[in-house]
Image (cartoon, rainbow, N blue to C red; front, side, top):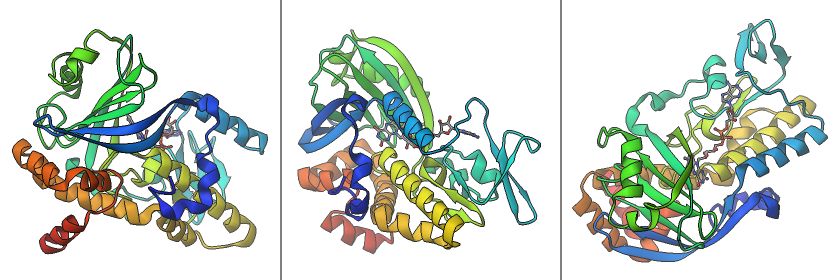
Length: 337
Ligand SMILES: Cc1cc2nc3c(=O)[nH]c(=O)nc-3n(C[C@H](O)[C@H](O)[C@H](O)COP(=O)(O)OP(=O)(O)OC[C@H]3O[C@@H](n4cnc5c(N)ncnc54)[C@H](O)[C@@H]3O)c2cc1C
């Protein structure tokens, strides 16, 4: 994490994940171009057991005094200068600060008066479809990413191993590239695509999830009077790789600290935006600019393949890890990205 987001150095403890919440550790990332050429480089990553991780976090929060209420979506109610939160207005509680961490699109943000601005545009949204599969025969420490318009238009397909026999297999697509049904594309990836079908076809599908992710960077205002937005609710997903867990953890932590200091010492909520930008703003902004530029290439498989060949292993690694390769930076400046 320190390598990926150097500004997060004060939050190292957040990423000390307890072993029972780590399903697997990957060591290599392998990337396939639309024409099937591949590049790989060392990339250490935890594959999380999110149920274990989130239950542990919830237990720790409860130990520290949080009261957890489940089962009903909440929204924000504003009345003059006051802010309240709850499933209905009559059941709502008055708050000094509300942290909207309710994913994307955020009902708490919208009802609290912070709009998702450019996320009304479909090109800024990715739709992810994922199977959890077992009975596979895969390399347990290699994460794979597959590009190509026939497979994952505007995004990529992935195999993330959880063990030698289990994996998350998924695709992230953008409907503005090619309006096709995501589930059909995922089935194509698993059962038909020449580079993956042999290994995935005979596996057993245990579960499926699908969700929409914001992939155009943080919303313009991540705070307002008495309201902070964290994680996907604030658009904090890295657009070039779709990763939003580390930024959700960092922004959630920073939001909690800023809210506490606001309540105790009346420190301004604007510190939230300063602090999350220090932690990962540079990488989020770089990743957003690169996704916008990559959109030009990703519509044409041959052109995208050519771009990946020019980037080579070190350039591809930089893009995937949200850094701008030297040559690309010049191109961006010339084209105004
Ligand atoms: C298929 C798929 C694969 C992904 N893979 C990766 C990956 O490998 N690595 C990575 O870093 N990221 C990945 N992501 C992205 C990652 O899951 C998100 O960026 C991350 O979960 C964001 O965390 P969050 O806490 O902001 O929001 P969420 O995880 O969406 O949590 C929001 C919570 O709020 C609850 N909620 C929603 N509305 C309300 C409401 N009105 N009132 C109360 N509660 C509400 C929801 O039920 C949910 O529990 C993936 C996403 C998908 C869909």
